[in-house]
Every structure is written in structure tokens, then in C-alpha cells.
Image (cartoon, rainbow, N blue to C red; front, side, top):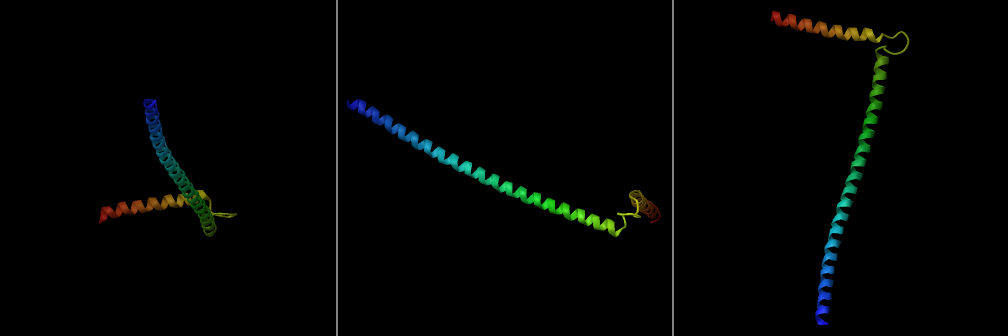
Amino acid sequence: MSSSRTTEETYEAQNDQRLDELHSKIRTLRGVTTDIYDDAERQHLTLDDTGNAFSSLSTSLSQSSRRAAQAFGLSGAGGVRQMRIIMYIVGSFLALWIVWKVKGIWW
């Protein structure tokens, strides 16, 4: 009987030890899960803030371009056509390039 009782106590002690190890692993896993959740929440907030910033930038940029178009007479009836503006810009760059090349030869 005493050998049977000793074996039971040994098994009980092993079970308690394994249960403690399992409990420790569960606590660690719970901590990791909580950290992952917190990190995901922080990233979610960061993405929301970034989205809001880009929306604000987009709105501001569209308002600025609309005001610039009105200031230069590009919008509405009688405004300068887009093709003419493009030609002015390309012609200006071409003229600057030619001046740069000619100046490079003479100097």
C-alpha cells in the first residue's frame, strides 16, 4: 500500500509541476496576445491619422489649384486653353535650354 501511495504522490507531484508549467505558458501567451492586440490598435490609430492627414492635404491642394486657376484665368468662360499653357511652358523650357547651350559656348 505504501508503494502505491508513493507512486500516486509522485504522479500527483508531476501533474502539479506540469500544471504550473502549463499555467506559466498560458500567462506568457496571454501577454503576447495582449501585446499584439495593443500594437494592432496603435497601428490602426496611426493609419487613421495618416488617412485624415492625406484627406486634409487633398482638400487643401484642390482648393489651392482651384484658386490658382481662377487667378490665372484658366477656369470659366474665356479662360486660356490648357493646350496654350502647355505650349508656353514647353516653349519656355526650350528657350532656357537654348540660352544655356549658347551661353555655354560663348563663355
